[in-house]
Length: 442
Ligand SMILES: [Zn+2]
Ligand SMILES: [Zn+2]
Image (cartoon, rainbow, N blue to C red; front, top):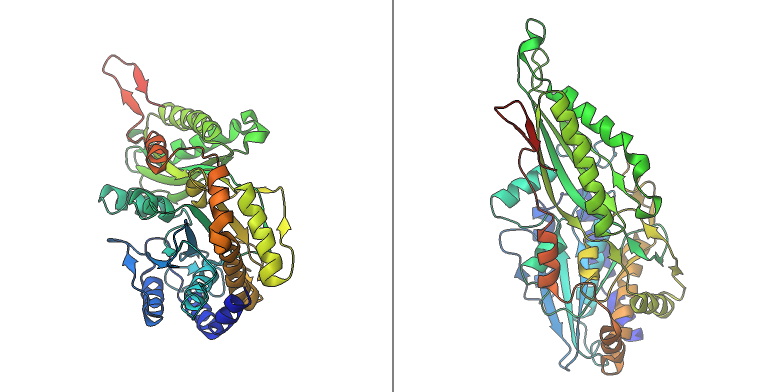
């Protein structure tokens, strides 16, 4: 382990330079072009051969210890959020790393550097797969659903997309450290469905002849109010979250709005709860469109599975924090009501996502900064190396045992993907029939 720490420390400048560059060049999911290029060049300069994702951002590489054993996937996310009021936001796009993913990518690069040093793999068995993964933040849903329509991607989340492309077929266990305020590991995250909701009305002169129109904005606001009115019917323990934004509220001020677009998620602790609550929300949204003589197109797609950190992997994280950082990470029972596509891995293989230290301010907010860059990057990389070491040393006994004891929710990747395919639904939800009745599709 000492070797690994020393090896990592040799690459401290590489890590810190990357943090600076990536912070200054934030890009949202599937648009991480500069990020991809920067990381690719640095990985290749270290001597890695990369497999780049076909037609999208992101890549992976596999390091073979030369001894047989399981494959551990280590992920670094690349994408930013958007928060235009953040002082460091890109002036054109509003993008900013207010979730700290740039630190994760920098730590991944440091790990890559350390693993190229002589003799660091001597005590380990199996393979280590390093992956710079795109699009964790589930945003710009309209843009991403267009990518799906064009056949560029099949899923909104980068890890889900990589899973579906077979990039993780050889992976046995997965780990990641997300940037956070203090080192810890919780129980996991809730999951979500992603929604596009498009209210459709009829334009007419807003002053001269409003009676000729059907107001899509009023249908939309009425729909959101109806959804709000059913919130208390959600069961508290299901942790249902519906948090819509209107991305297009009308066309011209002197015409009745004919189209209003909304993006949202429905989040919840289990897929069953999410699917059930999503139906109720769709009912509310559709009923309001009907009441205003409008229509509503709803495009539902899989977001992320609830993330369940593997208990054995949490123990590895705790031991590794002691070993690599000389302190205990906070092993909490907390389940975050955020969502992550690490969830999509967690139902298939033993997975853990921990929190590094180093950030302050509100995640996704305009006061988020990395107050302690070394903690968020260098220490994170050391901790991940610690986990790799524990998992893969001694003939990879720990990794093998964890894999053997793991009870997956889905037996394999295909079964999981088959399940979430059932979540896709799209189309206008109301048919106005000639006989004066209307048919709705929830
Ligand atoms: Zn985030
Ligand atoms: Zn994040």
